[in-house]
Length: 368
Image 1 (cartoon, rainbow, N blue to C red):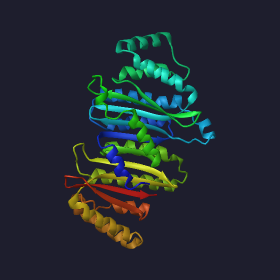
Image 2 (tube, one colour):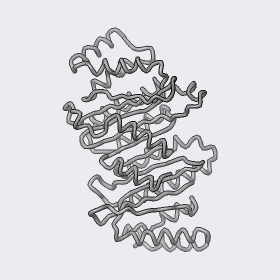
Image 3 (spheres, rainbow, N blue to C red):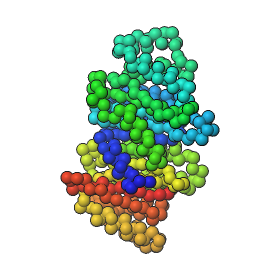
Image 4 (tube, rainbow, N blue to C red):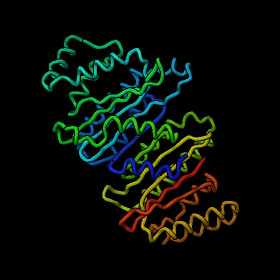
C-alpha cells in the first residue's frame, strides 16, 4: 500500500462534486443501492436524477451482458469489474470496466462506432424502428441499449480496450451527460475514457473495493453502508463482519460530525481496501490546523490506553459526561475510542497541510 492512499485518491478526485467507484462482484441488489446513493447526493432535480439513474442502470446492465469471467478464471485471469459515477461541474460521468472475450471485441467496436456516427435525428429514427421491429440483439438487447444511452446523453459514447492476452481484454466504457442539455465539446470533457482506464489501474493496484468522495451527510451514509454490507457478505464470520460495519459507521460519522464545511459541503473521502487478508478502512476530511494537536493528543492517548481496558472505560465515561468535548466538535469525542475498542490499537493517521489555508487533510486508516 502506497503512502497515504486516501490522500492520493482525494487529489485524483479533487475536481469531483461527487464520485463513487466500486470494484468487485455485481448483483441486482447493487442497482437499487446505487439508486439510493445517487438520490441522496447532489442537488439536481428529480428529472435529472431519473435520467442519471437510467444511464447508470444501462451501464450496469452492459457489464452483466458482456462480462465473461468463467473461462478467464480458468486461464488464471482474475480482473474485477468496475462501476463508477462522477459529477464534475455540470456533467455526470458514468462508466464501467469489465472482462470480455476478444471474440466479441470487433462486434462491440462496430456497434459503438455505428451509434456514435448517427445524428440526433437518426438516433430517434433508429430507436423507433428498433421498437417497431423488435430488433433486439442476441445478448439481451445490447443494440437497443446502446441507442437508448446515445439518445439520453449529449456526448459520443466512449469506449476503449486493454488487451490482456490473445483471448481476453478489459472493456472500458463511459457515458457523459451534460446537465445543461447542450452537446459537450471535447475540450469540456474533464474525465475522458483514458481517465477511466487510469482509475481502474489505480483501484486494482491499491486493492480498493470501493471509494466515495462527496458531501458526507447522514442521508448519504445509509445507502453507502448498504452497498458495503452487500460486498462484505462473503465474510463468513458474523462477528468480524459486524465489527467492520460498526467501525465503518464510526469513521463515517467522524466526517459528518467534525469535518469542516467546504465549498461542496462537509467534503470527505471514504475507501475500503482488502489487502493481505485484512480490510483497511480509510477516511479523509479537512480539519482546522488549530485542532491538529487536540486530535493527535486524543488519538495517541486512546491508543496507549487500548492495552488497559479499565482505564479506557474510565476515559470513555469521562468523555461522555464532558458535554463540551462534543459541543466544540474538537474530534476528542468517543468516536476514536469506539474505533480502537472494536478494531484494536492499529489506527494510523496523518495530516496533509492544504496550501494557502489554515486547514489540513486529516486521514484515518485502520486494518481489521
